[in-house]
Length: 159
Image (cartoon, rainbow, N blue to C red):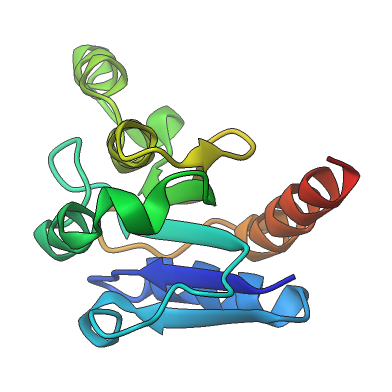
């Protein structure tokens, strides 16, 4: 299986997640979005896109990348998404937690955009937790990211 992980990262947390995933599954490679514009998706059996959550959305660079992918390139292609996000338990005051839950996360937006372009969404969007707006990732998140990708591959192979 050929897996392409395209990601953007501001403080390095999302990059750590993407690189951990790529190292966990043979046939995977992680590419920062700034280098992804010329990538040929032919032969890619699973496209994974990740972004930090910024203002309830993906970064502008990831948004532009997805917007630039033609429906013909994505129709029927398996895809999944992830983001990095604040751990809601660390957000105070409580009303701000509510705003964040209602506002949503980058992965939700990415899932919707890719599905609209005809992707077959594989697995549930994942959110990997950071302890503050600049991180670091919480303990265990890199292993959880590796397991998430392994589970996606297992599910795709079972189909």
